[in-house]
Image 1 (cartoon, rainbow, N blue to C red):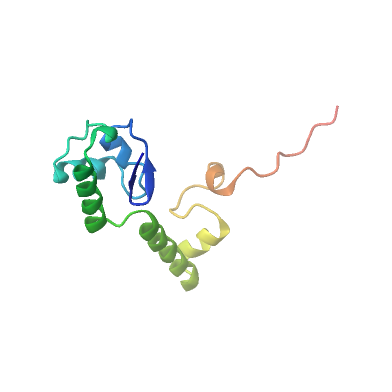
Image 2 (image 1 turned 120 degrees about the vertical axis):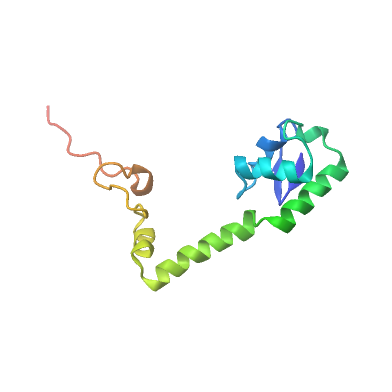
Length: 122
């Protein structure tokens, strides 16, 4: 198991897929990283030499905000919205959709399952 940006990544995965295990790196950014470092994305993580791993770690640390730093920044942004009392901040505190989605029917992921309704009598 390789450790990049504080995340254990399985060796059997292709590099492009393995990089997406890191918070803040998706498909497009993983491909971009592979191209800039000069390692093919189809290469398995276990096949990488220690020098290539070191180069990869260094590139990610220097150029991208990932994992803990990124999570902290996102939390601070949400906290700022809540403290200011903006509409979006209020939606965050109430656990409702923030970006204008319909809440009458399709908000189960944010609101959770509510009561099951009234049971019928037999």
